[in-house]
Image (cartoon, rainbow, N blue to C red; front, top):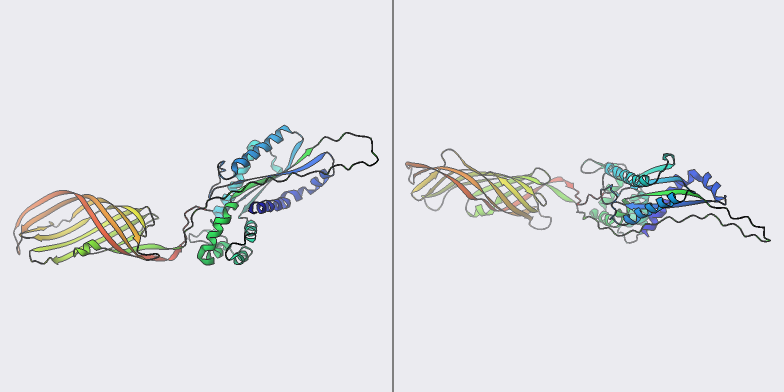
Length: 433
């Protein structure tokens, strides 16, 4: 039914844009016994965000065969003359206005090039119609589908007149798109995406030809002569429409800008710590965490006093700051004064430093929760220089030692709280436009 309605819409456009201007020619040839008027229509489909005709996609292989057949007919029959041809292109409505204009016009030109490469067509008989988004076609699809939720509200918006607006990225879009996305929090828009939009990404052409036929031999008049046959019009070829898998459309989600976090393992070891992580780009973030331990551990000769900071740049394979795997490059820097028994170890007014690589995984604590947890482990190198003193009050200096350390440089189970932007990000995983 959808394909049939699509062809009916095409026919109405052809009548308005092609056939009516040639009405005088058609009328004249229709009453001439040796002239026949013929219409042929061929349609091709496009993948999301594409202006390339893929022969393996949907019914395109059959459509390209039909173009070859039309070429063979014109080459082998000199009595056929092309009197008009119209090329059309459309896009589905989920992208920006500028993108959809480029797609619909690009699809039109892609089909026109294939036809012109095979068939010599005078420019003066060519009409190009860039429909951008065929809203009337979408209205007919919705009108013939009684299963669509909120169908009457959808039709009211589609038939309305809404001013052009902008999306979250400042790109111009048709005002109807914004209103449709609001129905049931975007659920109805997602349903429309799956049911209709694959039928709106196409290009087609209608060619009108005349063909001279041999006059019938003159015969003696009969008492009751039979009337001559009326000129016939060949039916338009209706392409077979097959279902197309659609990209998954995510619901609207708050846009994260920062996580505040603490490492539970260090807290358990009585090391106070606090950090933050900010989003730098789509898949990049900067994580900075500070550590401070001013304590004596149960005995006067057991002291672990540390101040450290560890900045890390991360690349996310999932949703940045929210969920998924990530890898990081970190640079630990630390100052310390540690006493264990009769020895005290202190940095010589020069912090130890190093560099390391880490791997981790983060996930939210509950659906739609701003709380989350991440698990991190890292390995790397540290250049360590420290002075050794006697483990007593104002103990004497004994020696300075140096070492190059290779091993774990990060280990954490971090609990975090996410801070989101007030704006929403409307993400879609297919460049489905």
